[in-house]
Image: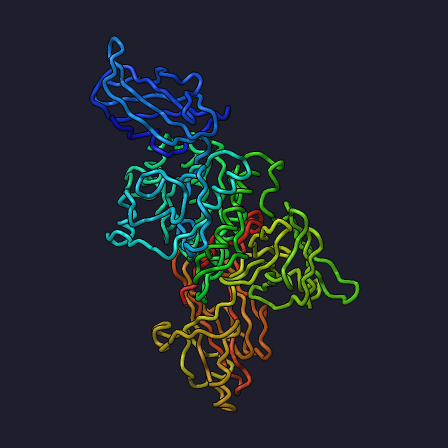
Length: 626
């Protein structure tokens, strides 16, 4: 006689709203008859559980229900199958069972745990884990030991090779999460470990559930169903693998699909969910707009999904390029526990994570320049920083370095800038801009501000950063003011273009052109873009010499009188495009060595205001192919 579902040694049974067990279980047996249970605690029989009928056994299987055990434990449960006339044919003892709350831990490596094991929290007897090898025990790191995982998906994702055990790293937020919940509620906690490092939202697609243990979602559901199918909530840390051009725009929609499936398959339409906002990434240079987009979409998830909180992690220490260190993982786990309690029980358990409320511009009466005032909600105590507050950035659309002082004013932050109020209205504001910002503002409870932005300080626009990776021609013979310069007969392929990455926003050919001055020269810049849907674009240009522009081979602009200095807004060209690839070709005359280069960026003008206010992750922009 053995259990196969819902009741195992040392497990945590999920309590119901009356704080008692409501567990269905089953298993395999040889006998048939009535299934009885006797429950003891501390050597004494629990009232009402002295040989009670809990189910039935027949045809090699038994099933039953264990209802009414009060929160706590540990309980010793004796099951027996009784045939006619009270004859007992089979017995089974289940040891050390607790009644409390169970949680799914899902996501990728920072939930799996990569912090030093030497910095892990000590196990608590009343915090248990369902480990990857399908056994229950005291929750201790590593919770996610993929080297012993039962579900084949964890081997498949490792190239078909079973992952090697890691004896040095493995601390995640899970143990601290469970320990903090135990300390604050006195209720036993159970953790179902389901995360796998490096995994993306597409790999967590719930439509793959039918694959069972061959998919991440299917494996999670298998593990949940094995333990009774009911949980108190979901703790989730994932998103790093989706900070890429193709995946970032789909993040919110994929999260809605995934979390809807979790609520459907757990039978809990209001299942509480705590999501960690992804932290930092060292070593990456390009593409932070997609990383920041995922972070800002995560910040805004509570507006799209009910009963969900997002916990910032931007201020925490890393142990390597992307993984939060052991001590900081413990801090994160406690933050997640506090957020979960506030989500489930309201403000009597504390405030939800800090949220951005409002951003406005004020004229500074002393300097005449503009201040940006940022207001936050759910601040416990007041905003604080160890040392000088850091982490805010103005964009236009790249960083402007215009903030010279940051002052914390209780639940507000005042940013003193070098810009006029008019210029500020054209900027956007971020907290935690880029891959690896330094952010150190918390509240008195040690909870970080969320990464946010870019948030428009004036009317929001859908604008690419200045494109500084272009295909360029060698220096060519002068075409004067470009009056007679045609589109190349064989297209761009005739121009011997080579890819070049420029520093900063200005695509300058100055060293080459100045070396040939006062000789007049001609240079070309070319850029391909891909649009996944029809768009109304504007091409925004700055230039300092004679200029001619072709869009998809059609001449759209000729300015023979371009002169330095170059400035964005020198020309603005309407460009309605269909889905597919398109090309920008720009010819620049060197003006006898006085012209240096161009600015180039794209604005999409057909994005609804409501999506503009939600931020870049809420709409599709052209993909710059170079």
